Image (cartoon, rainbow, N blue to C red; front, top):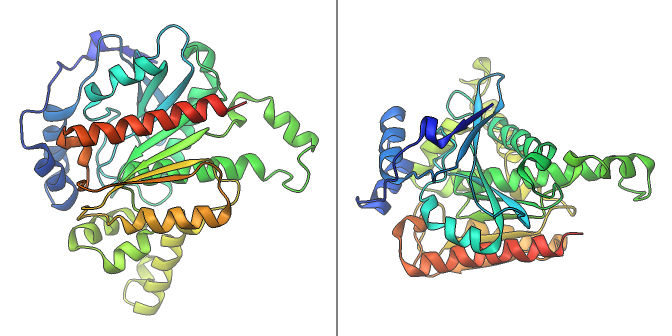
Length: 339
């Protein structure tokens, strides 16, 4: 199901407000969800002519993605964007997409942006399951988009970065779990011939929480509130039992922790984090990077941005653009390296 930008087009709205302050507000305060979403849409989102809105899931609720008109007639590959917003902001739009469109076209990359179910109604693995479904939808419809199904990367921001990394970990775990001891297994050979069997060629994460359990313990009150809205709730009978509730929370934090779920088949990853991040400290990406190095994950890199706060892309400064260019260049390298 496609909806053209002519049918549902939003006029191009360049940011004319104090964007960094606005985005920090969205992450850390308890504004009404509808008001938060309205503020973001009016200030940041841009759909170029030719953008198509596609329904990729209908149950338990309708979810959409945007197919952006980038990459030219024969894209070298594709990238899936996942926006941030504390797992709680709905909609498929990629904030400030106008800052990315020329660079994507220059590199011949087809772009998508997806929405997912949001907290507090949906928690834990729900948005990750949606991201996996969107990834598979794009792969199985690769011929419709004129993209190679084996050359798709994922890029996420903040909570979207968390979802992107978890999606990459889940997809590579599933694609290698049939017979890990025998790479010539007939089951693995058959899976390689399915369009939806290819894992992401790369995952790029901007300022994402990689150890949410640790962040819950030592982070700011704002991030603790966000995590409480996202973490699955303990059974009612355990709510009053501190020991059982804590054990439940620890288990759920492990399930949604990229650091805890990391494995040796993980895709190449680029972690980008601002050293001035007041919401999700850079140590979250630093510690995950060193774990990935210990696992021997190939081509995994870490970029620290000295002046970057959380959501530093919204600053519109050249040093923020430079970090984005490094991210796209990394994606191009991984697309080129893919068989």
